[in-house]
Amino acid sequence: MSNYIVGLTGGVGSGKSKVADLFVENGAGLVDTDAIAHELTGPNGAAMPALVAEFGPAVANQLGALDRIAMRQRVFSDPGARTRLEGILHPLIRRISIERCAAAESPYVILAVPLLVESGTYRQRCDRIVVVDCPESLQIKRVMARNGISADEVKAIMAAQATRAQRLAVADDVVTNDADLAKLSLQVGSLHEKYLHLSAEKPNASC
Image 1 (tube, rainbow, N blue to C red):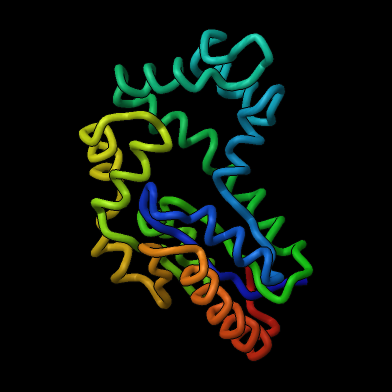
Image 2: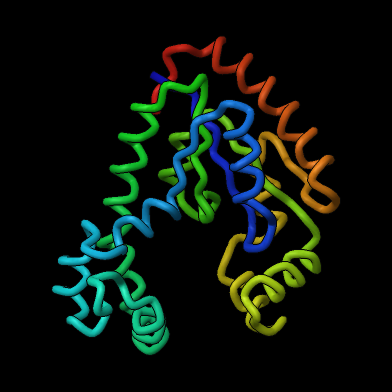
């Protein structure tokens, strides 16, 4: 069983997914809360009956998955909808992530949580927090290229998240993703060795 939990977070466009993949390549376990959310809201996902009961059949598509566009429109037009959505999804995501952390057989687990800084419950579960960081101008450029949206739209997404300074303030470790893959790999490899050492020192840590 893996008991040492490293929380991984970063702003939109920072490169969290790539960093998580590099940790996995080094031998870490990965529990990704975004992936869990997609499982729960996929075709006949475990959260879908509650979401349909709460918001009506229009939030499900023909495959029985969450219609994300319809849900975004609902959240945009109804300030209380986000709270109701999170009230359904977050307890399920939390429970599943706890189970998967406990079941992992790797020396340590990367618990990837995009909004880790904003969520006290996840921070309390982590033995260490690593933040993926890059200049905000680079975040904007990456998200525009990836999603085909405007700079103003990216800035609006960023404004709804913790600030760069807030993330760095809670970081035990920082991965700087402002150059090439080689530099990124070296940083992750070094942290991997550190986490192996720390996990060996704390074999009975709690997930």
